[in-house]
Image (cartoon, rainbow, N blue to C red; front, side, top):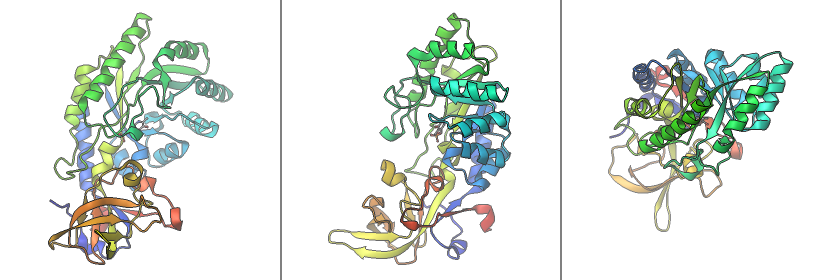
Length: 386
Ligand SMILES: *Cc1c(COP(=O)(O)O)cnc(C)c1O
């Protein structure tokens, strides 16, 4: 089954562009809010890095989610979109001074700290402003995720977070500093996780760490388990809204919270992934020696996931119902990795046909680059094209 698109409007637009189905986005957000609110102490943040299109951010902000930022630019984008500072969290292994200052000036909810030197710098910069920064420690739980190697983040070998063995020392240090307040523990094990047992493994690890802390009479205000819930790239229409009920229930069942603790989530892909498609036109159909190529006007500069992580996006010819043929779908960029899919069955392609690359709402538009002096793709919301 193909997606449904306003083709008559599309043909008037310059390609390539991103198209966002706002009905699906709003339904996804409603589902998140409904399922999370079954548990009184769950707070959901949106991971801005998945898609920072201002119009998308506006819709997400309206739904009441908080914002998870990984740079000063994202903090700015979130505040500009109207996210309240007390719902902004800021993570990242390499926070620059100006980024920390921006967070301090706006009194954001929490800095997720990833090293001792970073903690010291936050303390200094907060002291200079006579402020107390709220900090959580991002702990590397050494839990693997069954996903692509480039998007696992919770293994001891990854650059992220503070090693579990160092947790006590770092907490002791935070307690000795005047301008930071230690309020939480943060984790994020990776992205596009579909095997729920990975989240169970994270819960078990957090339970161990908390038991250890409780013995030392430490109960933090909040636990933040990051994001990572995956989407079905193979079948974008089958379950367009991820199974948030199951996801939250896993944490409810397996994670032991202590009285007064809140549980924070930072979901990116699962929020915006399925609502977006990259729309492109066939420029040429070229017969190669052994196969045929559909050469489209979008390239890896518009959607880099296939080139960067061998990611699969379902590709559809939305202009044609002709009999299927097999194509390598490739872009115009001067790189051999500029390939969207090999041996893809599409309704027979002609120059000018519109092609949809599905499930491109997350890590699509936001990762676009100007390589080859290309223009950045525009993003249209379905509301705007009626
Ligand atoms: C990327 C990221 C997320 C969101 O990951 P998704 O897989 O898109 O849900 C959440 N938290 C942190 C710290 C991240 O870096």
